[in-house]
Structures are given as C-alpha cells and as structure tokens.
Length: 283
Image 1 (cartoon, rainbow, N blue to C red):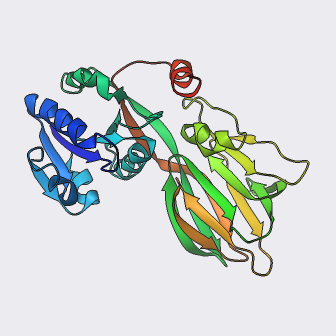
Image 2 (spheres, helix red, strand yellow; image 1 turned 90 degrees about the vertical axis):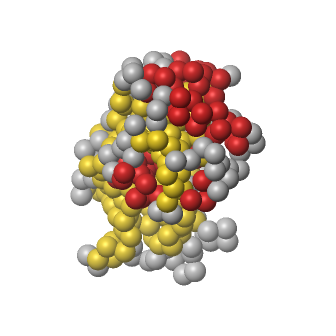
Image 3 (tube, rainbow, N blue to C red; image 1 turned 180 degrees about the vertical axis):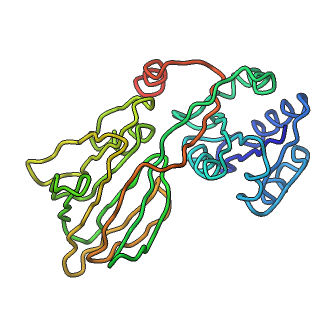
C-alpha cells in the first residue's frame, strides 16, 4: 500500500509523532511518500518523495494527514480531486475532522486489514462570474466566505435561490458552508450544527445589520447566486476553506452549487456524530 503522509511541521511534537506513524506504517509493509520538503526533515521515514503534491496524491492509495483540522482539510480537498481517501490523525487541539488520536495509533493496523469504512462528504463548487465570464473557480469542503475589508463599509447582499430572489442581508459578510463546515466558522457566527450525513447548504450572515439575521439551510441540489453591492472603495474578499483571498469587484456574482467531487474520509473508529460533537465541542 502506498500512503502519502502530510504532517503539519508547525505543531509541537510533530517530529516524534510522524516518526511513530511512519514506523507503524513500515511494520505493515507500506510505502511512505512525502513532499520533498518534508522528507528532508524525516529522512528515515520516507521511501518516495516529490515536489508536487498533486502528483504524489495521484499516485498514492490513500493520504494520512497528521495535524489539526486545517491540515486534514487541505489534504482532503486535494485528495478529493483524485478520488483518494484521507485518514486524519489529530496532532492539534480540536481535531474535529480527525479519524484517530495519536494515542490510538495502534488502530492503524485496521487500515491494512480493511477494517474501515469510507465516509463521503459533500463539497461545494464555487465560481465567480462577470459578464458571463468566469473569473475564479474552486471547490470547498468546509465553507465559502465573503467578507469586507478592515476599512470598508457594511455590504448589502442579494441571495438568489434557483434563480428566484430569496433573501437580502446587510452584513459584514456571508458564510456558505457544507455540513462538514457547519462546526467551523459558521458555528462561531451563530449558524446551526448539521450532521454531515444530512446533505445541505447552510447560509449564515456575519454580524448582520438587519432584521433578517438568521441562517438558512437549503437542500443540497440548490443553486445559490450571491450578488454583493460594493460601493465606492469598499473591499470584499472571497476565501475558500480559510485559505487565500480573491478580491471581488463590483458586479461580480458568486455562484454556489454542490460539487460533483466528494471528499472521502477513512473511518476506522466508529463514533456517532453526536458523540464526536460532544467530545470535541462541549468538553
């Protein structure tokens, strides 16, 4: 089995954890792949290295992401493009997306005996258009965020649902999340927690300045078009899963759909969503 290991090198104790993980994988006959920049740090752990994460992901059987939710999120998004499953090992504080804690590393043996399930998580297709031309495109596993700049004014947003006028918000921003992302930024903004098995699209305003200040849950086959009204020197930025920033210009429209691509998570330890939520969020 060829496994791509993606450690977050900024985490405390990551070297020891990565060495333990790779030792366990080698004991089961796995070939360990890493980015060249990682293999230099873990030269005794890596069998195959390369400089292109996409090429490594394409050639592996599965990805093991070692870190917090951000690390797992980034690895899962890339893996989804190539239809590869991901196992998250928690080396962070929350690790809501992690399948195992480092204290449970002995359970990694189930990966080789095929004692696991694959859980598919819906993703969002994101496109920015202007005059029928696509200016930006991406996919999101957690959320899509439109937010104003530090010095800009409140933004008016018009929401179209399946081409029909639906909602209008005056707010600092808008969050469109998947059920997976409902426990991230959307939750902090007052949005609902949604079981990942419930296929839906959640829209939550950020600091709304209007009576319409509630989140809305749409069916997963919905088409959402968001038209921000940007006046004068207002700044509005689009971020996908908390990464990067694309500046929205006036008359740009954000289009959100359910993606044809799904993230695939390896589930070794069977836990209900309610139990995971209680353990991770309420304790």
